[in-house]
Structures are given as C-alpha cells and as structure tokens.
Length: 551
Image (tube, rainbow, N blue to C red):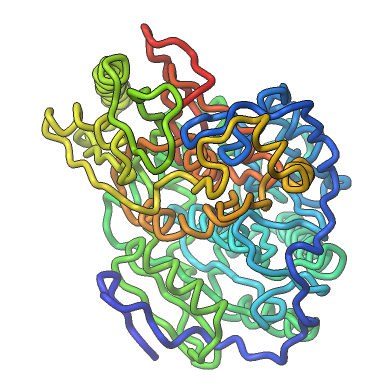
C-alpha cells in the first residue's frame, strides 16, 4: 500500500494493479486513419497568411470557408443508436459533448497513435468503479477523468447509474421513498436490479461493439459484497476492475458538492433551492449507516481524500495507463472557478510576421483597458448574484495567463496594474507558421500547392513545411491543461485564437473536426463555467470593440 500527498514534487512511479497481456495489435500511423466527413472542407481560396491572421491556414481555416461551428458540428458528430448512452448528441460546439457516444473509429485531439483494436498503451479493457457517499465528488471525478482520457485518445465513457434510474421510472412518477435505502421493499429492489442491469449491459456493449477501453461506473457502490460481485462479473468478461473511492470529511467540500449537484443534476430541475438541498442531504444520511469503505486487500484501488488532499494506492504495480490516471488525480481538484478566454489586442504592424513579435498598437492598448473593465465588472456582478442565492464565499481570486509574445503580455498589463497576478507561459504561444510566415494566400498556393490540398483534407493534423499543426499544439498544451485542473480559482487566458480553440476544445469535449472552425471574436470574452455533469459556455460582450477577422 502506498500513500501519496497531493503536493508531492514527483509523479508517482507505482500504479494501481491492472496487469494484463497486451491485446492491442501493432499501432498504425495516425496518417492512415480515415478522415470521414473531411470532404466538407472545400474552400475556394486562401486568405492572406501571416502569423497573426485568425483566418490563415495555420491558425485555423480559410477566408472563403463560411461554415458556422454549430452547423459544422452537426454534420460530423455521429449519432448513438437508441438510448444506449442515455444522452442526446450535442448539436453545437457551445454544448459540452463529454456525454456523447463515440464511434468505433473516433480519433481524439491529442491522440498519438491508433491500433486496430482501438485500445492504447497495452492496457486492455478497464472498468473504473467509483465508490463513495453522495456529495463526495464522484460525478465530477467521472466526468473529469472521461474528459482527460478521451483527450489522450483512450476511448472512455462515464456511465452514471442515476441516468438509468431516471430513464426507467415511468414519466411523471417520483422515485420510491425507499429507493436509496438498503432495506428497500421487494418492488423497489426489483427496480434497482433492472436499473443496474441496463447500465451494465451498456458497459458491455461499449467494450464489445464500440471497442471502448475505459468505462467509468458512477454509483455509490456502498457494500463490500456488491463490489465483489462486480469484480467477479467483470473478470468473467476479461475486464479489469479499478476502484476509486472519494472520501470527504471537510464540511465546506461537501457543501460545495451539494450546491453543485443541486444546480446541475437532472433530479432537481424545477425544485426550490432549499427543498432540493434538504432532499439531497437526506439521501446522504440514508446511506451513511450502511456504507462500507474500501478495505479489500486483493482489490486494486485508489482512495482520494478531500478532492486530492491525499491519495492512497492499494495493490499497485507498474502500468502506463494506470500511472497516467494516478498522475491526473494528483492534479485534480473540485473546480469552482471559471476559465475565461480573450484574444490579444491588435498589433502595430498590419501584417506582423511571427519573428517580428510586434507591440500593441494604440487601438490594442485601448482594447486592453476595455477588456479589463468588462471582465472585472462581470465578476463583481456574478459574485453579487451568488451571494443573493446564499453563497457567502468570498470572491474568487483571478489569475491571468499569457504567452511569451508581446501582444498577449501587453494586453494583460492592465490587469497587472490593478494588482492581479499575471503569468507568462511559453506553451500558450500560437502555432508556429514555419515556411509560410508572412506569405499571402496566393503565395502559399503558388509555392505549396500540394500542401494546400492536404490541408483542405485535414486542417487539424496537417503541417505546412516547418510549421506546427493543431495536433502538435494540443500535445504541447497538456501541462497547461493539467494546471487548469489543479487551480481552483478563476483563470483568464489571453492568447492567440489557435491556442484558445484547442483549450476550448478540451473543456467542451470538441472533436478534431470542430476545433479548426471554432469562432472567437475580439469583442467578446468566452467564459467556461464548470459543473459536476458538464461545462457551460457564456459569452460576455465587450462594448465599444468591433468584430475583427484578424488577431
């Protein structure tokens, strides 16, 4: 058994025991992955290309491409059959797609390679079984792990038992009063068994038909006997079981979780706030007398104390994917703060080259002041609204991240003048344009006609000579993503539109087909609001700033 503190300076070398023979076939290059739907890209020409042009080939599209992000997404996202995943597919990039079903040929934004089996890292099939009382952050943990593993290319889906309960209840019928009690009536026991059977059937279908690799079973799983049944049943199907127990003994964490679930859970749509909280607290108290913590020595499990304060591993052995899961859990905290995205102000040069790294123009400095005033006013109004709803916590701290490019630093300088902490991160630099730096669209078509044709087919993964692709940028941004998960406060990211597209793609579970078409106007701030079930988007208008096609 190994105990790890969340402030450890090293990533842990042991991992949870998930030993299996490699069932993956030899990896095939990413270039061989079929690009279904990519024929939708058929622009008639290229815009002027330079390092800071938002519509340039490298920074995300073409001047003649007029596909809106929502219509583009609707064309390319696959539809799940029936109620297999119990979630309707997102029709817009403004909706978090973390609960969408993945097709067997799905390729993720930061995926490094593929296999014919669809499974990576020689890890086989894994079911992560969550354990913990209500309001301990299990749903947040399931969704966050799904988001991170999918980003890496591990085909993952979270199966929330509560979703299946809601589907199996007759429309208009309330949950039986004894549904959450151990000593329930026979009819309620039968209902619970039907709900569990439907959920497990979808787990097996996910592994067998959709070539899934990691299923996350989100339920209380309170008893040792019930957990042993799951391990035996999964083992018979060649599925390895990893338990993660979330333990919280800090009232402030439990209260924050209760409020988050009350706001976002489908169980409490239309409920009065106080009644919803009281009802949820009763569900917790009904479970406590019968809850048995994980202590089975033969199980592979992770215990997560107080949302990442301490981590304990049992029956751990070396394995790459389990190590990545542990490493992610050491960076994960219950995210209360929002993430804001803003573009940098305009430069002094009309056609700035990547190498020149120009300063802000007078118009850019004026934009920086208006941006600062707008965001700070918005945060004050949001804090006032939360206080009116009984949230007496102080206003969250705001930190600002920029790249090392002059325009982003100077755009954030107004925040620094007002006492906010600004940090420069080289990973937030825009995609490198390579040999196309400073070239117009006509010059690119003349000098690199073959590259232009390849870019039209796959604008996400294609690289112009000596340049970066969106895929390269997604891999480069992983340390930023992990730190975003670790910081509980609000973050403003001022960066090039290519960087904003990739980070937005992570937080809203966008596919590689979505990311190059994402739209960020200079006259708005994009706010990502976290919640237990999914993230939400709000666009904050910056008045007095015109829309602009260039960055």
